[in-house]
Length: 106
Image (cartoon, rainbow, N blue to C red; front, side, top):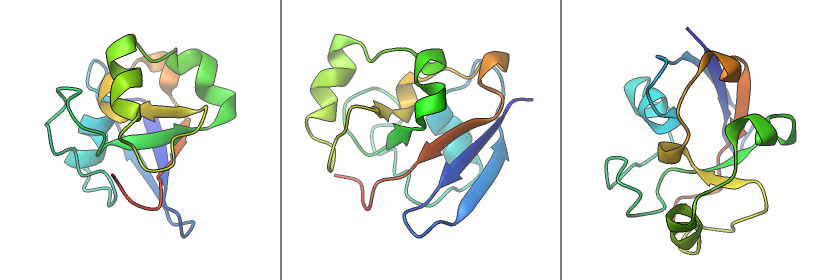
């Protein structure tokens, strides 16, 4: 199974195994990673699973679709590497993915 590392604002790391085909958000929720609220359950209808994708992984995670970009307007401190973790599907190519969590979900 691919491994994903979530890094909290305080530097605490949570390395989790993620099932292929699941979303990065689902992997976080299943493994109780703090800071991923996922209020809409992955419907791309909120911004409470906002993450910052490590620069080395941006190409592999792809670009945000139009709907996701619209929802990122509601995220706390969106940046160029912001994504909604519910919109990134786990594949074997994402083994080792590193993402950072914002200070809080907005």
